[in-house]
Length: 552
Ligand code: HAS
Image (tube, rainbow, N blue to C red):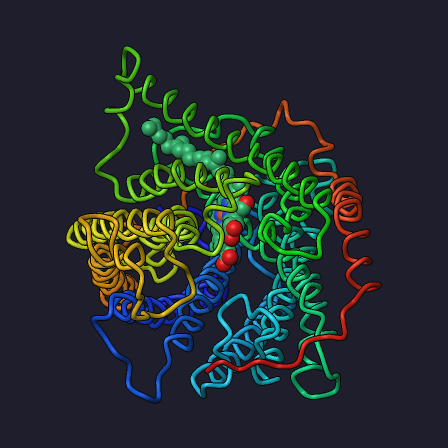
């Protein structure tokens, strides 16, 4: 069955994005492998390569480049699948956006490779990279905006042709994520254009460090939801179809995305709880709002459990947990994403710990935080993307997901899970012992610091073993992608890979949930309340401004 196959041209657009995503993934995971060995003192880099250079490449290529290109591939194919093929104009804008994003990426990568930008993915001032690094970042964001607005234009055209109708859930969620992304990027665009670029090119003498960090985290926290929401889209829309069920509640799903637009932005100070220069009241307010943004994730957890239980019972599951065994565990498209969800239970709990004022004192700037983001973006998000890859690539390339590739996919998710479990557990424990993040190996002179390098679980060896397993898993994944794209047998009418979209009953969904003006308006009010006074304080009482530091 052809299953509403999207046009060849739209497939090419999505596949090209996936190609860039997995090229970044390959190099990024190799950088990760180098890091765990350097931190364990098992590897010394040649003089021309620096730990912080590798760490910058790792963070940017995996957390920013892999995710963003994959997310747009998912958006392009899903929007084209649910709202119809792109017009040549919309497709053209999407390509233009793709190229601008890619040129920005290349500029950033060249600067890192040239040793001109070892500033890590947070590019905290007063560390200063070459001006072109920041130009690359700006182009990257502009490129994503062009693609985002092209998708919005396609959606608006559909709305015009379907007056009074709610858009399909996939499209609704895509638009919500793009709105979140555009509002969030305003912070990073402001600091890059008005602070970093003039400072890096020598047009201004100093930089207001606190302001730049605050504008970065205004962007940095919703950034994590820009990664998470496409994964949630897969959980809400794709997974129910794979297991043969339906969306548990259309209005709950839409409401949870609306809540992310409202609460994911005015919370950046929870990354700055230890920083001076921000009055406690504003930190407290943003911490309260952080607890609000946990709610849509709890709603998602509830909805997923309900979806699974309802389907399991439909299939004859009895008793309290009898339905669990009825789920399609042999289908790797489901199992991969289910494991991703399981990882998010401790991942989310860790986030709640981080957001708690006093506990943040214990974990801030330690390896705990590194453990936290590996079991949030590195597993729930990344492994959901792997689960999507297994059918999205053959759907787009017209090839088959053969039995032997399915077995390999199981091996890949199993190794990723084991590797991540070992590495992130060691990182959490090391963080509790006080091991700092963002550091290469140093010959520590203190007994408690030396304890980081021995012991059974809480040590750097475990981290390196986990990291190595993860790298092997990444290579396996690249092999699977290459097969699914170019080498697996071509599919025919009977073996066509489909794009699973579950039925979502909109009959009880209130229309105001799709009133974007309302939600954007409330989001702006919340942002204004949380940020206007502290940011204007930082500007009015600005220190003279810091000069540049280049530690590499
Ligand atoms: Fe975080 C730091 C707080 C979620 C990523 N976070 C980071 C950094 C990254 C990151 C990259 O408050 C480091 C930044 C840097 O470089 O400095 N985080 C939170 C909170 C949440 C949270 C409150 N983080 C994420 C997600 C990320 C991510 C998601 C990536 C995708 N985070 C923090 C804080 C810091 C921080 C502080 C700063 C720390 C510091 O001091 O530096 C919440 O959104 C979490 C809510 C989630 C839940 C879990 C719900 C569970 C679900 C799964 C259900 C499972 C099912 C399976 C259905 C409450 C949805 C069925 C199972 C059966 C058994 C049947």
